[in-house]
Image (cartoon, rainbow, N blue to C red):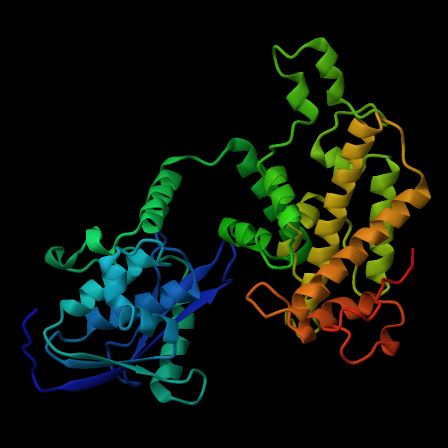
Length: 435
């Protein structure tokens, strides 16, 4: 677009806000603020076709600014989102060359770049520190919150740039096998409907978590949580298969055409009921299930935290469970502790059940055996976390302070431990035997 400036410069504040961010019923709003009396000030709800999040709202606010101010006016956009500003400046060329493949909120960023290029005057981006008394930033923040609270999205808001500025595709020279594979996966993922059983299990997680925590996580938030750093690789695979109902248990053995000798596998040998995952984890009278949850409860309540009775969502969706203090702030260390104990115990019950049914041919475990092996499992997880912390720090490793916050309330003789117990794996550390 050829420059045709009118000699006027205007500074505007943009901001995004999201009510119930990360939840199914999230609402995102964009705010544009110039001054108290300017008629171009705006508070809009982000259209429902876009993901409702703080990040999408930040990008939408910049699109709003590009469309609301005379295209010949030199525009200074003030934002407190470094992520958005970097995506529209430093990363813009690379993102365009690669067709925004695997770029978060790529569709919105593409629209933002197109709308900015449609202007006939220079656009300047300026980062300002959020919640620091900056008038335009504070004004945009208020308007963004108002936009997020609107009952209906702004349906008539046309965010697309002019036709000639709608770029599509990627440069062949910028493509790699990895990017091509991601694009193919993404397109196929949109074309394939979610499996019926998977959808039903996700709904159960949402309902149970909402009932306990007054929080309804989105599907994306659930899958992201199940991949979190507090869930071991083995537990991730287990939870993934449980959610997709991929194990050959229960009704699987009652399908049409199944030989009669195999149909007997459908029922629990102890309870004589259909042995689905609900039964295995939550209902069976086996020693491994009843004792494992008893031991978990005793260990958890010894920290003084509220115990939540296990149900489908609380166990399978344990990484989504939230705990808050009296001020309403989330307690991340308590949530991490819950995730660890729930996932390790659920996977422990499954492994013990498989050993009892397959290897031992139905012979039941002794109580002392179950207790010994459960404690060994939890102590083993503690040893692994300490070993990872003692090595080079990565995104998925715990910091020493985080490790201490998660595990110390569960340890025997915690007050007698040396200062470096989180990094010094030579120090013997074990769980309390409160059960």
